[in-house]
Image (cartoon, rainbow, N blue to C red; front, side, top):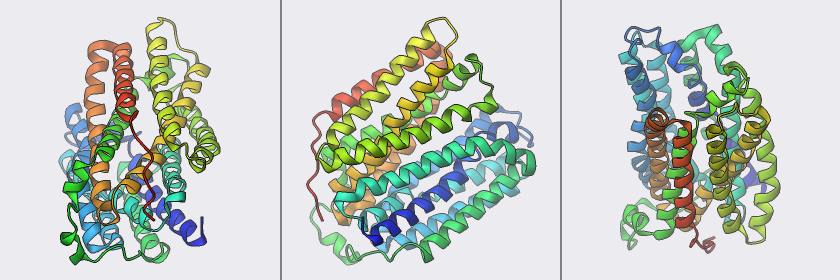
Length: 397
């Protein structure tokens, strides 16, 4: 990477990290803390309040992506972070569950993932873009692990309102990074040019078979990720690890998987084997689902070391795909339509979260953990079959 690429990658990874920490830090304590508010005795409403973020984000990823193509990356990202900060402030003030739900919905309206990823693609060469995306993926994975450690502590000190106040402050810090730390965005196009390009924008994105494969992939990946967590925490408890100590499995698994990914993915990409690494990562996650299915159906309490090993393998596959998929989207999409392409991609990611939670909960209740993991393994197999014909994209820059 050039110094400018390192600066851009570090700054935008920090923006992602600040925003995702603001999201993740709420999740481990949301249900318990929200139950203390008026209306919080309704578990269905609490669940809806938690999920509204993903729903509004799914609707607005494409508009924010298109806006970043037309009005510029930085103004769009700043606007989205302001919306996210406003939603966090509403949630911090919320006197009851209804206002908390409104705050969560407004948070999700700040759907900047596509704009940030498109900005990163604009300022990096094809040859180093996967590494840049991996920095973003690593920041997200580490924020997830960190949130599992500090969320219960913060909830005890400042409560849910204090945590949402912190998320608002983190969003404002992200704005400062965008304005003063991130490099100037390059001129990819003039707004007037967009309508003059044949097949430009959303229509082109929706017709591209390579992009459609990647959009299906991100949907399956995040549906499986959320669905499996309907059962994995209970299995860790069965293995003898209390809920407050689950980070002792997640944090080492995430950290070790990032080291393995960095030592394997980037050399394979340099040698022209990105497709192979991509398909292996899908297979690894599918193998983990089969392993969890076998453990759940064995009738015996799962071993903690076995579960830890499966989580390690899962995060190797997951982090590899988190780094390579958006990189591939940015390479396949023409520069003038990157925001639109990544908007569709992030929309399918958000829908995957929603479907994974809803269907995973139903499968867990109706068919138990064995049915849940069997469905996840089948979904990964379908993805592997669909992804198999993929080819490495031709460098655009």
